Image (spheres, rainbow, N blue to C red):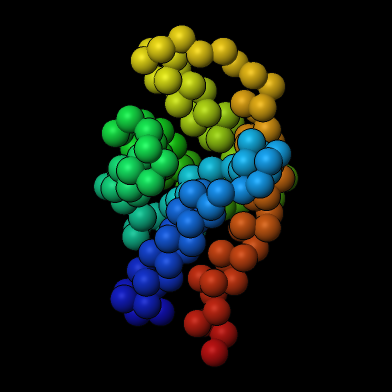
Length: 160
């Protein structure tokens, strides 16, 4: 795979994840919408760490801040820290089976949610509702599907 088509695929999947992030979901689905962008960033960081790094996470985080209307830099900080952990552990994470990767994904999503809640709480006091945990669980449950889909996207050119 040449570098332009590979980076194009990565960019396209991140754009699709951003679209899923800002789609107005009906009723209850909006409260369980996982952080699709973070899940895609984690996959690409573990799969091709030489192409996706901290700068990409920061840039995508700033774009997510703009798209979601959050304070500038919140998602950028969360994405950067999580991608940093993924870069450190990427060789180990590749060896894990999907359930074990799911546990790592759970803690990454939980860390992101807690960091965003903490930053929101600094601005003005907020209460922690039970719906706070749902995107973390749903994102963890979606990980095998995202992993399989993005793996097919990454390997599709090799099989042709």
